[in-house]
Image (cartoon, rainbow, N blue to C red; front, side, top):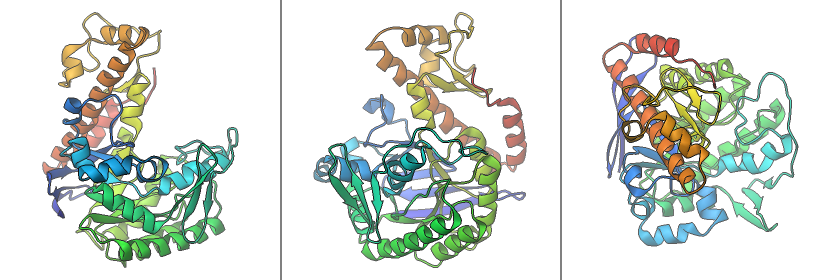
Length: 398
């Protein structure tokens, strides 16, 4: 079971609120989807996991790299395996085509969507992904090759039983030139049609708009995805050198998205606070990103004023001060910043505990931000809320 209904739209931009319905309940959009790569959110126990509204699990890691899928299929799918009643999405494995492939060859790291204006590259590594017409051969840690193509990806995702699944694609590199991106897109389009043909389940299958930072390719991709019978649309791949380029890509494809307003729209791998506003303003409904949970594990938390790195010894806090004043997350209710800092300095296992506490805060904070954005759209005050929030929120690591 899967339904999406738009409830209200801003009169001044593409921002909208909606509801996604699944057999596990109703989920309000805009919605943040947190990284649950290996069918878990690292550091969180089952009690804390219940506070999470949505997560995305990884098709490649669960179905190709490990044998976890056998346990999950035996349990009856991801929801039952995790005892989780929130919304679950599974990616297709397309991002691993990039992260195991040209990400290593081009030396740009796993998050390579905004590599900067200059093509400054880090140490190059061996490309572990061999792309063919039928799919991709991945070389694992032992040197053995493992295959994943559109048919395998869909069958794995059907076994995992997520509410939303994605078509298998290639996430290209920000440094790929036009000709390569065009060939990749043509292949991805063929894979998209195959995914629709193979799918037998009642899960919602999203098609993915690719095309790099090339206007005609993005438009071609959006036009093609619109022509097929997908239940949702995702935007993937490299989005240019900076945020202004990302906005440009969204502006290119927005007219095509409006041809099918009944479909939910998802942005892959995007989730910084300022990026959320850019996407929502242009009609995006859901977002997934590792930022809230990964940065929590490294000691960073989000507040209405800025992102704060609690590992920095030069920072000064008052006794009893919380991460954020008036925050109602369990971490802020129970611990001061100074207490959290002491945990960070201490030895294991307290480091595991503080990582959990910071993860709890970041998840609560991002979900609360989405709730506030939703409320502002319903009240017709999205632009005012965006201006007020971004004026106060200083993107600065201290």
